[in-house]
Each structure stands twice: as structure tokens, then as C-alpha cells.
Image 1 (spheres, helix red, strand yellow):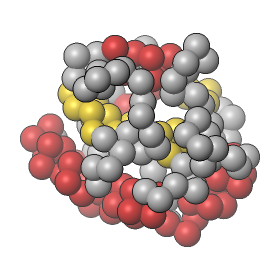
Image 2 (image 1 turned 90 degrees about the vertical axis):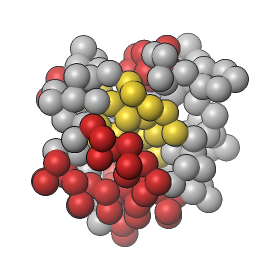
Image 3 (image 1 turned 45 degrees about the vertical axis):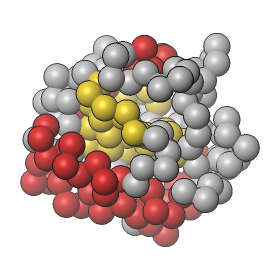
Image 4 (image 1 turned 180 degrees about the vertical axis):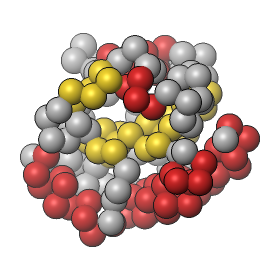
Length: 158
């Protein structure tokens, strides 16, 4: 993961090597999805619980590829996530599938522990990848998997 760059939600280039030696969750997010509330609340809860104490990092990538459920601008997305008191890292809106998919997502989907069950494509909003302290994809979770249920997998990596 450390070889990639992405623009944060303010448009600044971020080298993902800043996450070296941290366990990270990488997730595609959307503001208008049925899964939004539980995911944002639980991701923020995990970040509050393990961000300082264990070094957990969360990288949220807004994506509008699924039923146009993330139509807003970066400013609108930032305003939206305030209601969940989001303090983890937010990035600019990206594509996660197709020719224009962000290189990070192309790479994660190609990894043995990041490949989809039937297809490599991201199926919906809130697909979650866990990256270990060495920058390797170690798990992929379906959109319907609530973040709190990933806690056991995270604890093994801290």
C-alpha cells in the first residue's frame, strides 16, 4: 500500500507510506446508502477505541459508482460526516471499479486476500479492506459486514 498516493478530501496529495507500521482499514464510503449510518458510527467507534492506543488508521474513499449514493462535492461530504464526528482520514471521491479505478483499489482487488469471492470488482459501498503493518492486504469484508465484527481480526494485527 505504501507505494501509492491519493488526494485527501482537501485536494492535497498524500503518500500512503505515512501509514507505515499501522494497521489500516480502507473503505469506500457513501452518504446516501442504507449502510451509511452503521458503518460511519462503527468505523468512528473503532477509530476512537484503537486510533491512539493501537495505531489504527482508517482511510475513507467516497465513491459515487453505486446507485449514485455519493453525489456531493468534497465540501458537502465533509459537512455530512460531521454528524458522525468523523476524525479518521477522508479522501477525495474516486472510482473503485472500471478503467478509471484508483490504482490503490486496482492493487487491493488483485491481492490474494483482497479478491472478491466471485468477481474482483467492488460490489457496493462500504467494502472494507484490512491492511497490516507491512502494507499488505490481509482481509476483505463485504459491505454488509459491520465494522464492529472486524474487531477480532484487527486485534490479532495490533
